[in-house]
Length: 111
Image 1 (cartoon, rainbow, N blue to C red):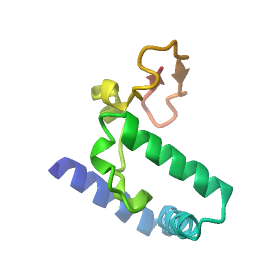
Image 2 (cartoon, rainbow, N blue to C red):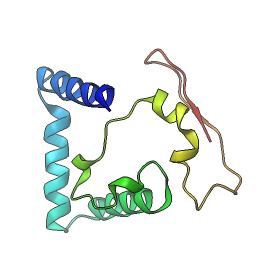
Image 3 (cartoon, helix red, strand yellow):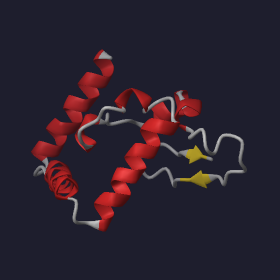
Image 4 (cartoon, rainbow, N blue to C red):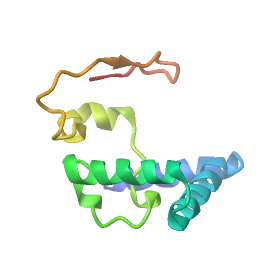
């Protein structure tokens, strides 16, 4: 928990030092979601609802009030807790493998 808190604070510190673009984007997105007049906010709302209702990792966030209630995660966390991130709706289905290039220094593969 302490490591997650430190990582989250470092993320927001780095964002602030870089001009706060991520924070501005999230605040704008949250405002748009609250107004309820944007199709993309409906899609995000559906995605968040799906995540909290069908995955072990996100179920503890079921009472969320906005996207800022969700943690900032790293690839390593997904690798370590892979089964907790897979939706119960897709666990027994054939999945397609997706890979990243590793441009951040670490390749990532997920099904």
